[in-house]
Image (cartoon, rainbow, N blue to C red; front, top):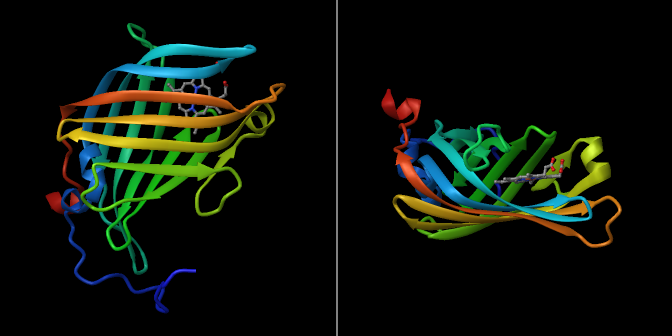
Length: 210
Ligand code: HEM
């Protein structure tokens, strides 16, 4: 249990409408990004396949969101991945990055059009230059839900993402998605990593523009 207030309905007074000014460490992810040196290791046949990828990420601020007294500032993002020189989408992902200033909680949601959603969490200081979020299958505060086929063939047991801010115009990540692949005795580490450079600024959230 935590020290949540008895009043679960009242929102915080005087909420600052400017999301970009209240994103803590997530401020470094706001905007439009491209990374051309992605490295992916995915399960293939009896082994693994290593592939290079090119990535574009758009992460734009949303208006502040309240669960009663709990206040989040966040980014709505889209990740689009192709192989170098190709147009077919190799990996597509949407979701939110959320920051709770009162507690330092970071929440990362992932939805992938293979029939999979992840809610990963971590904690950091507002001025942190690196942070990590994790999710475990079967959890409720964080977790992973997959379609029945994925559960059968490629059960996803855990997810970890480490983010490093390299300055105002660059950031990097390392991801480890641990899969239990049908017919294999050892867990498979489906890993992805990339460095992004800024190609566009964030657009202030509607309330801040208003
Ligand atoms: C930049 C990030 C990522 C890239 C480039 C990527 C790429 C890939 C590729 C190429 C495959 C093999 C697909 C196939 O052979 O049909 C794969 C499989 C898979 N990925 Fe990812 N992936 C990424 C992130 C993630 C994340 C974040 C998750 C979940 C948390 C995830 C879950 C899975 C699962 C469950 C499979 C096995 C299903 C299958 O092979 O059809 N991936 N990924």
